[in-house]
Image (cartoon, rainbow, N blue to C red; front, top):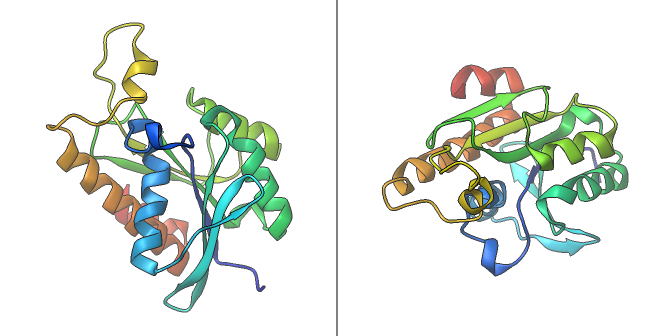
Length: 188
């Protein structure tokens, strides 16, 4: 297989009980792209992975089957299996520091307190990988962060959350077709 222009990996938790939660917005973005690009995801080790084409670019989509806080195991495994340069990886996560309806794409950065990103960085041995953060807001009482991220968006939040997921999908496609700078210029 020739090297893809991008392997987009959406973090989240496995299982139907987490499917529609804020914490699984990374999975939701990959699900949307899978449908748009007609790429089916197949079980491979500890992830679901699919390959296809967008315009003239080869693109990979993946969702780890590990829990969020162990996502680095799957991401590092995929990178090693496909021998991907670090600049061909894009990790998609929820971010409670961003308002619902917003996205932020960066070529590098810290975990920002996100345990999934921290584990990815630990397992890759670097923070020099691209990440796409999808805002989930932080409207929760003190001490209730876990309940908040593991619950669905409210009826009031759903339209903005849907719009952000669509923007995130478009950002992934722009990055695959052009590059991260073009995607950041358009979506940040």
